[in-house]
Image (cartoon, rainbow, N blue to C red):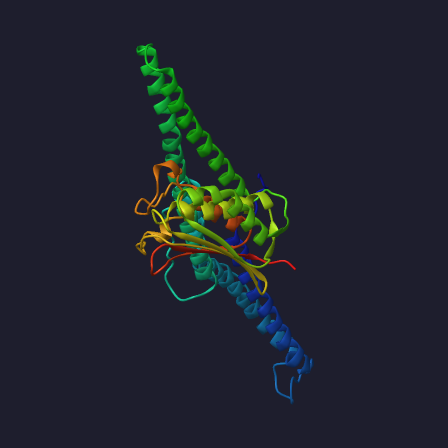
Length: 359
C-alpha cells in the first residue's frame, strides 16, 4: 500500500521534545512577569525609592530571556534527537527482524536484552511468533514432502505393473488387475484423507448440534465386522454428549479412533471401549484399547502426519497411510477441542477428546 511520505517518528519525537521545552520556558517567563515584574513601579524612583525601575528591568531581562529561549529550543532539538534515537533503537531492531522474516529467513531472533518494558514485551512476542511460524512452515514442508512420497509410491507401483504386463503379454491378467486395484484403492484412500485433512484444517464447515453418543454408536456399528474378524470385543458406554460442529467430520473423527484402536490391538482377545459423557460444559469421548505397552516417547508423535507408529501391532491389511490420528487431531482442533493421548500401564492407548458442550 503506497502512502504519502511524512516525518519520521524520530523527527516527530524530537519536535515534541523541543516544543515541550519551548512551552515550558515561555510559561516560566510568563510566571516571572505576572508575579514579579508587574509589581515593580514604573517611575523614576523605582521600587522603594531605589533604582532601577520596571523599564530598566525589562530592558535588561528581555535579551537574556530571548537567549534562554533560543538555547532551550536548540537544546530541545539536539537532546530530543538523541533521546528519540535511544528510545526508538529497540523498534529499529524489531523492524529489521520483520524485514528479515519478510525475505524468508524465519530463523532470525531479536532476543532483546535489558529490563522488561513495552519494547521488550513486543520483542518477545515477535520472537515467539517467528518461532511458531518457523515450526508451522517446517511442518508444512515436511507434510508436503511426505505426501508427495506417499502419492508417488502407488503411482510408481502401478507403472511397474503396467511395464511388466506390456513386456510380458502372456502374464495372467487377473493377478495384474487385482494388484492394480489394490494399489489404486490405496491411492484413492490417501487422496481422500489428504482432502479431508485440508478441509478440517480450514474449518470451513457448517455447524450443527451433534450427539457424540450417537456418533460413537454409528462408528462402532460400522466397524463391528472388522472387530469380530480380529477377535476384538467392541463396547460403547456412557450417555449423551452434545456439541456443535460438523456431523460428518465428527463421525470421521470417532471412526478413525475406533478403527485405530481395533487395528493396533492384540492379535486376538483384545478389547476396545468407547465412552461418551457430558462433563460440565465439556463433551468427552474416550477410546481405550488393549495392546502391547507403548514407549512414552512414541505417543506424542502419533498425531503427526504419516507417523504410523511402527512399533505398534498392526496388519498389512489395515496398514493405513499414517493420517488417521493426524485427521483426528485436525478435526478436534477445528472444533475448538483438545486431544490427549496416554499409554495404558497394562498396554494399549487411551485417547481422550474434549469438545465444547451444548445444552
